[in-house]
Image 1 (cartoon, rainbow, N blue to C red):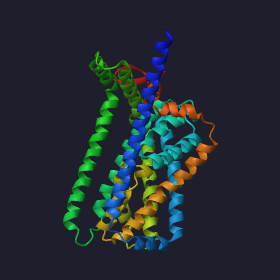
Image 2: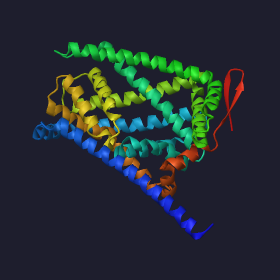
Image 3: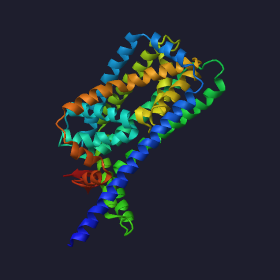
Image 4: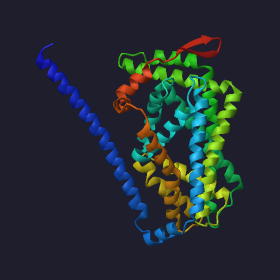
Length: 381
């Protein structure tokens, strides 16, 4: 290899890395300005002095109680994650808790891009867990989270007291809740079908994507993820495991609903626990927006609008949304920084794992093999 060719290769790799980094930072900057715009748009006519006064009057005891219950929620997430990983590999509850808090701290700092931290961080703390296994079980976790949240929201609408003057609007909200509930049922039926016929579907997919224009690496990643998903869905064949995942998911969302109610009580609002479930649904919708600061701007706007639907004054509604945002995320920042600073983690490897290229290599490696035994999908290796 000539010296000129070598230096040209190095320069090309360097240029690609620069472009990749610029793209990542540009995305963060765009999302940051999106959050700022949302804050400005929904808060441009607020009386900020009144918002500040509402925050100052909040009952600190209720807010502290809310934070403590949220901390318990992180532990419940770790317990549920361990149950989801059980069909694939053993795992450490302590490391799962640490990874959960670090992940939520990352989501708060950089937005939904921080979601990749959890499946990449856990294997560095617990080598028994592959990044692909962590990634797919988190996908299943999101499915159970969404199902549980929709069930809480839709069932609560049956007992919900409609605010005066909101009857026509509530009809649309109830229709949306019922449609989402139907979607949950259909989704779980689809997952059960996929788990039962996973071997065939994986085979069909391998044949379908085995084309020259589909890169070999992409084919391997798709097949690997499908196998890992089938592995994690083995819990659907074990009613005991399904029960425990459902139980911990229900308990988890209860540990979010209770702090939500405590925040409402802290501001002495004339709202019930049923109202807190309604607000929790609005807050969850806002939290999926991928802006930095834990969906900053979108979370506050969605939560405040949910409160205004319940005829709460605009300034007080935004004061509550600020407090609720801190209650949800502040404990994760504390725990996350603690574990990050004291953890024996290779920062260089962590940065490599966060890049799409290295993450793909991790997902490809040591993928389980699919075997057919009758209609049962088995995972070996």
